[in-house]
Length: 86
Image 1 (cartoon, rainbow, N blue to C red):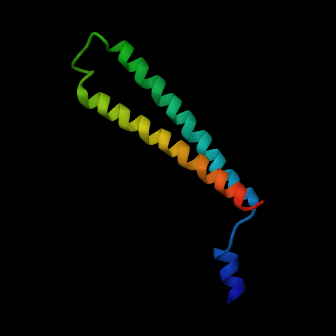
Image 2: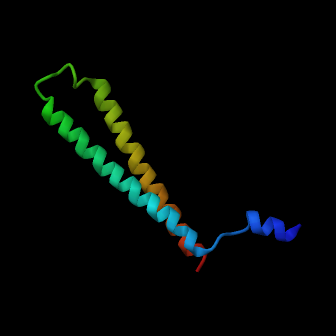
Image 3: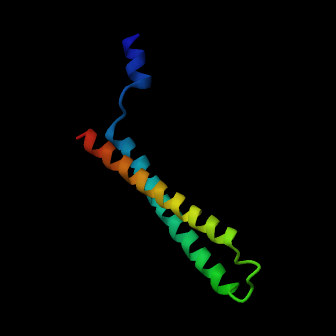
C-alpha cells in the first residue's frame, strides 16, 4: 500500500518543474499579446467613442491583471519547485 501511495501521490522528479516554466512563458506572451491588442484597438477606434466606453477599459485592465497574475504565480511555483528539489 505504501508503494502505491508513493507512486501516485509522492513527489515528482525535478524535470516536472519545467511545466511551471512553460506556463509562465505562455502567460507572459499572452500578457504581451493582449497589451498590444488593446493598444491597437484604442488607436484604431480613438475617434469612435461608442466602442471605447468604461466597460471596455475595466475589462481590459482586469484581463491584463489576470494574465500578469498568472505569469507571476507560475514563475513563483517554478522557483519553489526548483528550490525544493535541489
